[in-house]
Length: 212
Image (cartoon, rainbow, N blue to C red):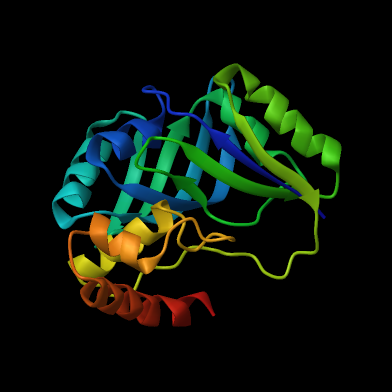
């Protein structure tokens, strides 16, 4: 299967992007179904929000104020959303497309998607459709899919564990090759190396079983 990774830059009119940047949170979401209308697309999605407890509460308040939100269910930081989106997003829901991982909305307001298709041309057409938004093509390649990552409610992490894990993800600690090490992360977290490692390892210990 062909797989593409794209990053759609921040746009203040985007539903999740504006709220994520405003509140310094990261959103992981997986679309489950959609309905296409003449002037918009309605998407049912679920996912979770990573950030401080204060910022998550503000994010939920902001979501509820947006008239594009049709329905919402909240369980701590896990959300199920029924949302009206711009018609341009229909390109992500063509027959034959498969979301390999949840979409990510970063705290910079960017959207990151990893999508598969039997046809390379279909993925290239997505990139072309979003080009007016200065979309970034991270990569496109043919690969065998070993699993599909679908969001589940996150384990009960402490605030320090959430923040340590969020920082590690955002700074590229889990990338290959790694862009940062534990010592550098601990400095950014403003704590000792051993303290940061303690929070991060405990977060990983709780998260890993849900991924397996």
